[in-house]
Length: 46
Image (cartoon, rainbow, N blue to C red; front, side):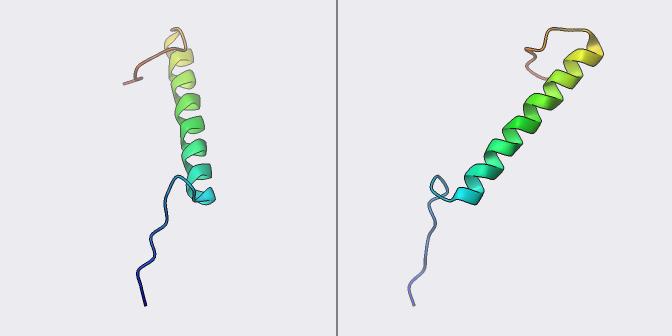
């Protein structure tokens, strides 16, 4: 039996997960900016 390798860029579940994580990241940055009263284009909210 040969090993099977899945290319992550073609794996639909992986691509969807990455897209959702990017959405969550943007939502957190927007929340932090709103709480600080700053512009929404922040590098980090620490």
